[in-house]
Length: 184
Image (cartoon, rainbow, N blue to C red):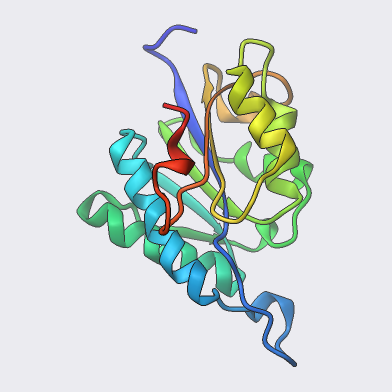
């Protein structure tokens, strides 16, 4: 891939959510661990120089709270997130349809959504030249606060399948940052 035209897609699964009784799924908040882990995703993005210039976030409370923590770590570098109804409980195909409408002026896109859509999307987009360790990690277990970074060298509107290179998979955690950063 030519580095001149390469864009990056960061796919982030929301942090650990609570299951309060009587609360609709869309309104489930982050659990205590989620509040601790979510900022770590923002720190990981800064450390690895993968700072988004556009963020699409599911409307669910847990994704919005994750986004708030990530943006808190990004500080002045954080773009204003766009809440996207189409990302809530979305399949890989639905998430991709949302991404396909992103303007090509966006160089680094962060999408914050839910399982199984996030994992299915990453595996659908990953090309054969992807980092094999990152691919296996994403395929085997995509836990809360798991994030994947893919490089794209075509317009967002043309992104479809096996046409992005998966370069990183990480699971930033508050209690053990080193564990989640084994891929550069």
